[in-house]
Every structure is written in structure tokens, then in C-alpha cells.
Length: 334
Ligand code: GLU
Image (cartoon, rainbow, N blue to C red; front, top):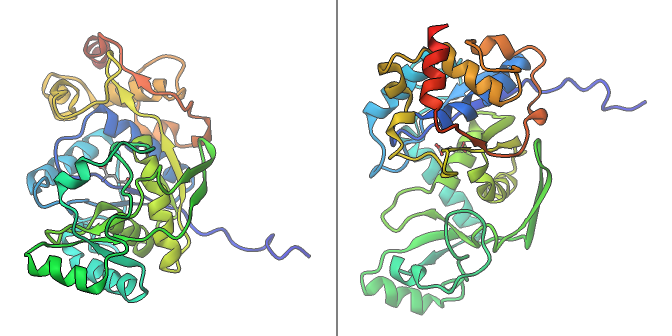
């Protein structure tokens, strides 16, 4: 008898993981809506996690506004900073002791090394194959420093970044939209920081530890993060955890083909709301772009949960029409 047949499937747990470094825009909501539908269609649990690990860029006011925008849109969650849950705290800045504990563990396993390269030195690296935004792959400059060389650099007053030494040449994983994705360690940026020289824990470490500790089984997020996934999978493996299933959804671009960013103020949810755009217009517009409606019409997230299948989302960017604001205004009047 096939023993796998009777194994109960683990309940689905997904997460919305905004960084409170700005206001939510249409691009964030596109990913969050698809994540919400994926989890709700499976009867799963949604965690809201505030990724405020970078003290220079995060602000508590943004966290408040993010929760307000999500609630207004009808994208709800079951566990989070505002309502607690069994795997809290759900705000990264409240979990620093836990990250330090994991750092110690990785250090004691001999998997890390101090890197004394300055930003300037890193910037001047010759361009090497890489994917994503983080520039050339780190070539391992500080990997083979002797203890004496390290001590000398510390004596000079240099503070070290702690990097994880990659143990695989290639990492493959299955993405629910793209199928098998294989990337070399260099394409993922090479040995990456776990802790910056100013003591701030890296996004990669915090996300992997949180996904592990919060029992996340399914990650739906923008495909700008695809190149980070091999790093996070490696962390799960080194820490003895099963990585979640990943789905990297296409990005939303403006009519010129640029990624939505802070300067696109007019695509911020709060801005649209102030201009009289309704929550149902935003959801209905995005649902139509996801192929869930034949044409945009006012709608609520729960209208699409039954039978939702993330694998059917076309892996091509969503390009906003030049007159997107008029489209949303017209939908809001219906
Ligand atoms: N906090 C990240 C962001 O806002 C998302 C991280 C993730 O989904 O893994 O870009």
C-alpha cells in the first residue's frame, strides 16, 4: 500500500509580509491579493508580518497605514501584530533575540565568515553574472583570511559583515508559476550577508527564520525576489526545516514599463482612496488583470476565492494603462 495516500496534508499557512518603508501601492496589492486568494481558497491561515528589520527605512506610521489599507480593501489576516497568534511576535524588530540565536547556531556550525570589505570595495567589483538588483556576485574576497589577518583588520577598527558561505553550486526549486528554477550561487549574489557590519540582521535571515518559526507552508510574492529564494531555501535546509512552496508572481509596471516605486505616489492606495476610488474598483481591476474577470467590474476579494488556482496566473508583467486613474474612477462610480 502506498503510505503517502493517507498522509494528511499540512494545513496551508501563508503570509503577507510588507516592509513598512512606505505606503502600499497597486503593485503590493496585486501580490497580496493573489497571496490572500491562494491561502483562502485552500481554507488556510494568513499571517501578517511586519518586516521592519531595517531601522533606517522602517517607520511605525507606515505599519499602521499598511494595516488600514489592507483592511479597507478586504484583505484580512488571522495572525499578526495587531491580533497576536501562536507564533508571534509578528513584527521583526521584536524578534532580534531569535535572529541572534540562529546567527550563533550558524556560526557554531562553521558556515559563516567575517567580511571586512567596505561598500566602496564591493561597488568596485567587476560585473559578474547576477540576477536581480544586488549587483555583482560577492567573489569571496574575505573567505580565506587567516585569523591573524582578521585580527589585524579588527584592530584597524573595521567592523565585519557576517556572510554565509554557500555550500551548493546550483540551487533548484519548483516555483508554482514557473516550474523548475535553477540558479547558480553566483547568479544569486554569492555568499551573502546574514548580519551587516552595523549589526542589523539581513532580510534573508529574518525572512527564512520567520517563515520557519511561523510554520509558513506557502509563499506568494513578487518575482523581484526570485533571486533571493535559493538563499532562503539554503537557510531552511541548514537549519533542518522544510522550505515552503514558492510562487513568484509577475510585477506590476507603469505604462512606461517601470516598476512601481515610491515616486509613483498616485498609485498609492491611500492616494487613490482620497481621490474617491473605491476598494471594490481596485480589487475588481486587479482581478480582471489576473484573468479572474472577463472585464474589470467592482468586486471583493472573497468573490474569487472559490476554485482560485495560482498556477493559472500568466507569468508576464501587468502593465498599467496610461489612463488607469480614469479606469478606476469610472469603476468606482458603478
Ligand atoms: N518584505 C518584503 C518586501 O516588502 C517581502 C518579503 C517576502 O515576501 O519574502 O519586499
